[in-house]
Length: 87
Image (tube, rainbow, N blue to C red; front, side, top):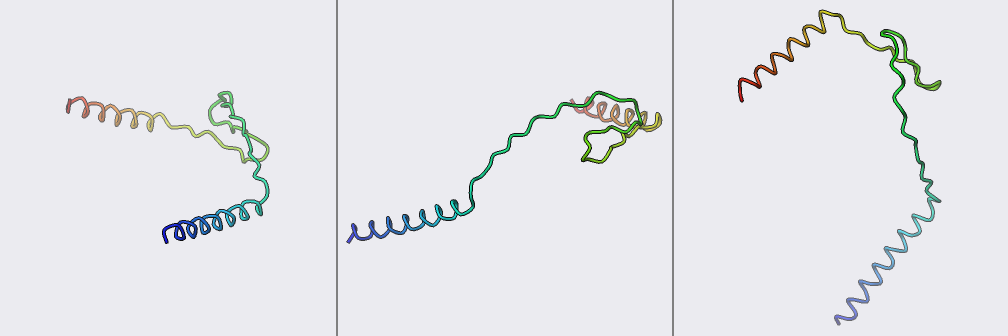
């Protein structure tokens, strides 16, 4: 009886594999695409739109005001001081 059980399991596995093969062959060939790594564009003047390609929209580089930059720097210095105080 054990041999009959093994043969039944093998038949079930073969049927499952045939089904998977049929599904894969029905979808056709899978084409692999290799994309090139894009290099960073050269730095441009502040506030000037950076053109990446004809297909994409132009992006404007955002510029922080001196006050905002100072506020960020002060907040970072405060975080560094807190970290140093813990150590």
